[in-house]
Length: 358
Image 1 (cartoon, helix red, strand yellow):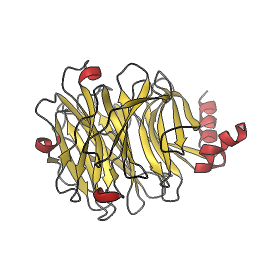
Image 2: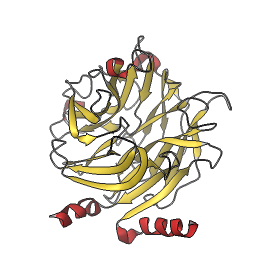
Image 3: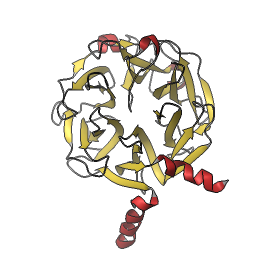
Image 4: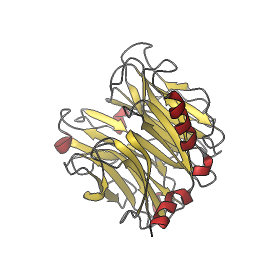
């Protein structure tokens, strides 16, 4: 049985097959019970940074959680040993997580928001390509509101705007709740955190319609921002809202019934300016990690490819230096939380199955 599994891994990871899948964080190894909540970015120098939460004593969302990173200098073929971006209290039950990194292309600095016990928001940055990180700064006074009972950044990547009067702005997708744990449908909202001075100061945007949670954001060709959100409306599909002022305010959200979801995080990025890529478990349960392509800025999603048929959950897409596509995502055989895997594929792999079906 072990030999069969090894053979399957070799086939799945074969470059000839067009899809390369590499385990990056494996639960139960290197001092952590479980690894969860992946985030992936490509630095200005082309280095890949893979972030996640290292959960020491169990799988749960709260406890002794550290924020970790690994680096790759060869587009994800190999990875450095993991290092700690931030942790508190040694073995104390302090939850450090929800990584949301963004690269400032003008300075090369990497800015990242993170949360402490989902009550406070911190900002840290790296000036040396992700090798070391500044002491996190508490910005809760400007990144939260007094009536919020829960807050999270990302998880996933932020963006830097390139068009219009807000060009250069750093934008991080975030979410918050104003009531108890089971009131997302009425008290859960997405929002943005943004900076117009290269990360020196930050402001919080206005909330979206209620019923929203974890989100991802992209810039469209006309300068609008699109936010794609985990929805608690009960329709098992993503919700979408747009902003005409760089993420400061958001229009009414609408459901996208094509983007089926099990109420889970997802990833949305731009590819070569005119295309959008989306990833999530395309099911009403956390299975079937799928990547989709839109050629009309999210109006339709005619192309999709299955990465993993089994258990899968959170993910983060990125465009690699050679224009191939990378995705860091949670997967396993019995549970979606057995490991965090990096997959790499070319654009041609994504669209080839659609061509064959014509």
